[in-house]
Image 1 (cartoon, one colour):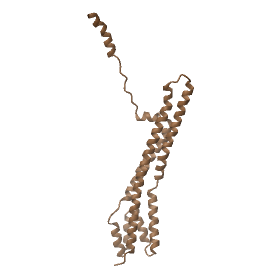
Image 2 (tube, helix red, strand yellow):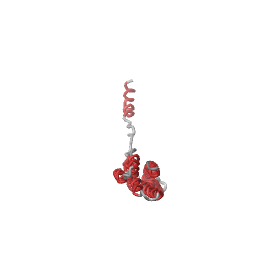
Image 3 (cartoon, helix red, strand yellow):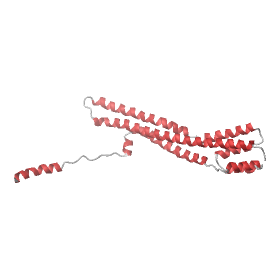
Length: 230
């Protein structure tokens, strides 16, 4: 009985000493490093996209601020003949809408068609200024995935090159570098492209809203000029 117990002890100890495989993880930076040099242009594009987004967001939000009493004051000044006061009010409101109305006031006394064209031209110019840089976001949204796919092709070429050199002694570990490059660059390119795409559409929506508000103010301004004097 004691002999059997002694024989079972080493087996029990051996079982208890079996080490479980450790859980391995890889950080985001380590994953990006696996992508190789392709990740450098993708990183630069992501920085440019983030900068353009926040810079344009600040400008567009400032342009969208509107004093609801602005047009009422403009109406009162014009009807009272206080043109200089109306111009000063526009200059003190540093917004695209104010600059558009200012140009219209400066054209008072000319035919209404000339005033309308002047207001419309300034409005188009202001909208164009708001859209400055958005084309770069659109380019990044389409170009980043293409750069990622370029890295995918390069990674697969590397993997097949290693496979051809290995002959019949193919080792999966020797193919890991190329496969990592292929997968990581695809992920990086799609990530940057998707972020730039949504940023572009969001900013475009904000610009369209500002443009609609400017159009409404221009129509209101022309109505003020067409109102009969009291």
